[in-house]
Amino acid sequence: MELDVGKLFSQAREKPLLMIPGPTEIPWRVIFGMIQRSYNHHDPKFNVDVLDATLIKLREIYQTENEIVAVPGSGRVGLQAAINSLIECGDKVLCIVAGIFGGWMREMVQRVGGEAVEFPVEWGKNIDLKEVEAVLGQGGFKAITVVHNETTTGCMYPIKELGKLAKKYDVLFIVDTVSSLGGADIKTDEWGLDINTAASHKCLAAPIGLAILSVSKKAWKVMEGRKAPATDFSYDVYRWKTMWIPPERGGDMIFGFRRQPITMPVHTVFALREAVDMALEEGVENRFKRHRIAAKAAREAVRALGLEMFPEEEIASDTLAAITVPEGVDSRKIIDIVRDRYNIMISAGLEKLTTGIWRIGHMGMTASPDFILPTLRAFEGALKEVGFLKKVGMGVEAASAVFEGENLM
Ligand SMILES: Cc1ncc(COP(=O)(O)O)c(C=O)c1O
Image (cartoon, rainbow, N blue to C red; front, side, top):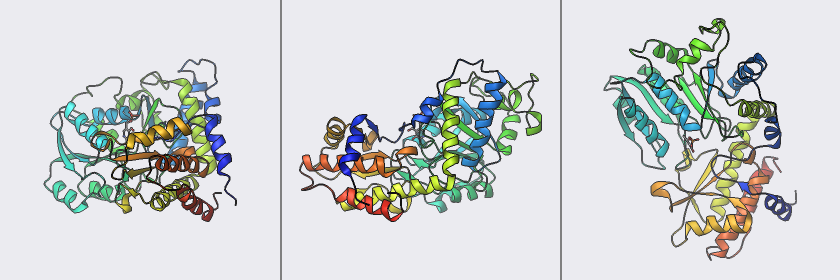
């Protein structure tokens, strides 16, 4: 198929393209889904027909039979709700820290009085599972925390293998999938995730506003057996079991009707319903595959431009590309040119990688040639403008070849 870069560009110029690693572009259908009258959030027409129905449908994306709950807030709120609800003063937790977001969970454990034992991982490198096992073998741990897709570095970690270790050492397995759920194959039940906590605004392609957690039977039991109630009231996940989940699904529904423990953002839930329906209509396997292809296309483009990916190849993320800034190139200038000249937003790195990498998200609807090719073309244009490239087109060509080979163009 002939590539019409001109057409792709004019599409991109009509409105800014958000190619940062979340929040990401939202389909119009999802945006229109929010156009609703104001609801009483306890009205079963919302509570049961929309909120609960959406949470049940999400089980297919999570690949779980566990209950899923959603709480108002951004991605970090889900991490915090999980840790506040499960970890008590003095509990020893193994916190795998391979980037900023892993570090946040360590801090959250410390803030509830837990003993966080950090397992540091060099940014961009894989986790040494033998070392993890050696630490777990010392005993006394209640939980492991890990980020599946470290958005800081563009690394996707082997949580299946970590899940086996969690099972072997009988510890809770708390996983942050904020930037991967909906874009990557995550087998919550098969891999033993006790908490799988994601967000509405990344690969699910819905607006910012909901943190979404699946909770295993084991996790509910641990919450039930706490010495003291969770320190945080609003984000105590256990209240979902006592107030919301019906008895036939293992809950208590203490008020006799399904009462949300916290007032839910009704319109965001309507949007999420649409986003989940779109994902299921696409088919979860197709969706995961589309993200894998997008990631491959981005990696091939990076190579064709003479650049390098930041992560080790075997753990390069399916949902964002982290690209090493070459010597002598001003990383900020590239981001500014891509934004000002081409109307496309890409990201810098974070903290010690601020000027060391660029991060380009391919999440939800943007994991497609329609978004990735104009972004690559703009990126090449910027690299040419600063004198790093002599001509443009190699990256777009390499990525197009991947998309064409997979019949996505
Ligand atoms: C892996 C991961 N965890 C947690 C967060 C925090 O999410 P939020 O900024 O939505 O609170 C992010 C945000 O980018 C993330 O990428």
